[in-house]
Image (cartoon, rainbow, N blue to C red; front, side, top):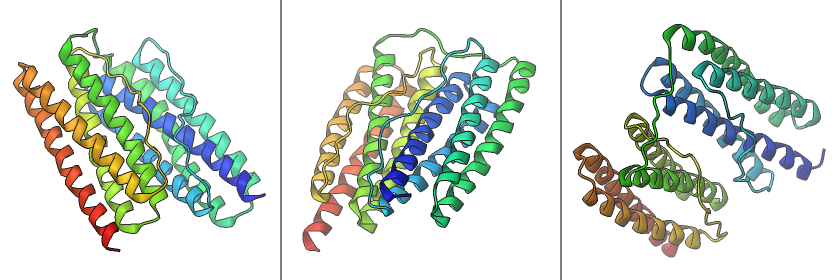
Length: 280
């Protein structure tokens, strides 16, 4: 099989991993605190690892990882319904990985896909268990219809964090610079933490986290990538500061200021990388 065709297959797998991450996180956040929610978040981290492996492999083949999100299985009125949809998503993923393993000749890539497949099979079994556990424990959707200014600010933050997670990962993959890639991955992990903090705060406070992102900056030169990242961090740090000053809730105020300070730290990290590029 030609490299271009292998890249297409791997990008299809990557898109579906992206969809699984978002579907599982949405379910975990909607369930609030608890053992099942924590286990689902752990599964989503497995899917993030898969996405990373696939993206690295695509770049190694000379391709560009896609940022599109595959098809989710939304719907379901109860937590057990959600778990049934998660089972179906894992079954579809396993079927596709088996097909791609059969089609791809490269032994190393086949081995990687077989490794991922083993996780998907384990995930399906876990979600089957969660169906019964959700029924037994009476797990419910903890979200509400809160739509006030604080809820809008939190959802704005979720949208931003989702966007920059994708942006920093993409910049890291395409930079082909070890130091920059390491920092991009570190900051993407931190932004993912922010997304979780905001989503959990919103859901526990009666709101509905919206897991959507805006446009991702995709320059091809390393300096341009970093300049775009510095610009967005400065902008959002100011927005978090504004939102913190407006809210009367002391816990949310502390959360927003903590994230603001993290974003300002990212600015300094990216500025250091720009300086290193200039001296190299």
